[in-house]
Length: 282
Image 1 (cartoon, helix red, strand yellow):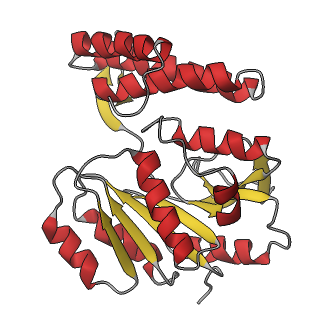
Image 2 (cartoon, rainbow, N blue to C red):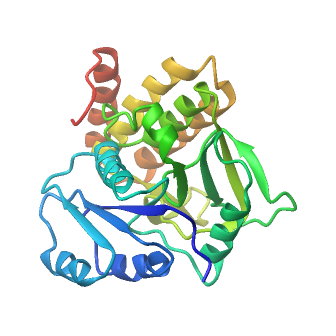
């Protein structure tokens, strides 16, 4: 079996269902250690007990939602203590099919000089490419292999962001320190983004849109404003893309969401809190 050398996985849980066990099993056998950080306010004892019975699993249970940045920092610091030189970060709903992870680790092992690589990530678009690896400015957290030395150098994830833009901020800071990020174009991972809803457009056609809760939109708006202010002159193309995506998310929630007034309230709060420099957990 192909295994990545000195790699420890970190998985973040938040109110998981039993599918998380199945997802973890798609990469469990490839790793020596897996850190599971549970950010749920009320822990699912049945799932946690099943995880405790699995070899190589190390649990951190917070009994509250400390945010994705804090949970990642907790898990990665533990992974480094266990000898992890590279960290595979995974969401609870992410998994690899078939031989995909074996191919991912083989590609990783075959790379000659990893010292200047901050992170390596899979392709989320499901489109094959002739270029096996390309340099990128952004990688989402799930499925990414992080260089532990870079993590220590840039002091981990920014916990002020709590959730949303946590991954982009990490990527930008790593690049500003002189490190590179790469996407493996022919390595694919299954990953869920937001809550999908079937809607009917004004022209009567059926479409799928991703919706978010009002409080999640608060973080999206607040943190995107922060990122724009901080990085717009350094990474203008990526920031413009993020801002366009935020506008689409807001539009989808206002047009098709069921909590329109609450959405407007949290959008306004997100803007106000950014201006007042109120960060962290709402």
